[in-house]
Length: 296
Image (cartoon, rainbow, N blue to C red; front, side):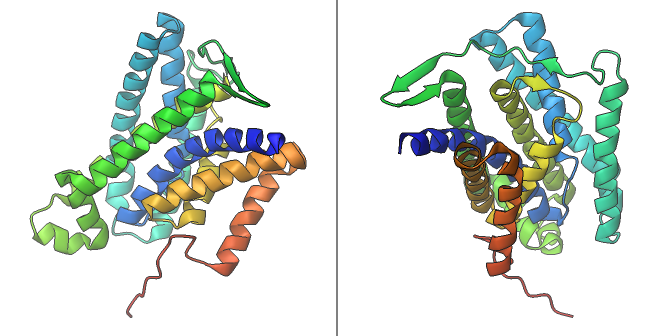
């Protein structure tokens, strides 16, 4: 039981990061029906932004706040630029065109980072706060895990507030429901979509720094696997559903850590994807997804 509770806490910490990244996938898909496969690489940009600032300023509570804010700004602007120049011209094109473009943007960000002289292809050690462990009986939880869980929960609550209780959130819901009708009602569709990309990229930036704090090694390809697993979490919970993305992230994180603790770390990825296949076989729309009828 002690081992189970320990791995469960580890899973909540990892699942919080997956949930943050998955929220970006599900918000973008819910509005423009696009799978943004460059989302994981925006996580990488956020982690490197935090790395350079923390290396320059040193690790302290104030410098961590500055690193988060700078990463939010850099990744938010990057998300808006990607939407404006890569995805917006293809909005009326077949979805396959946008999908291929998203993969191309991902490769550009990865290989662009590899050739930059101040980034390079080699992994780097991320400067994180000193690790202190709180022991409660047979269970231990580190200060890094507490930071990850608390900050992730705060960001999810802020996102929930923005979507459900603000004018911009109401516009996002209107555009996701019917883009043409929202435009006729005076809502700026392009502005709302750009805001959605910025918001998703900010969450990816937070996920990048938190992931680098939990696993303190960064590289230009570090966003590939977390991004892919976050996409799996979004599909698992129901792509397009914000609560579903959160639920899918936690399920995936807990399943992965329990597999590492009780079976083998070699099977962690296989078990995660096997859960997706089983869930989609039973409920193709995901756990909280809704069926949509398309008239022809």
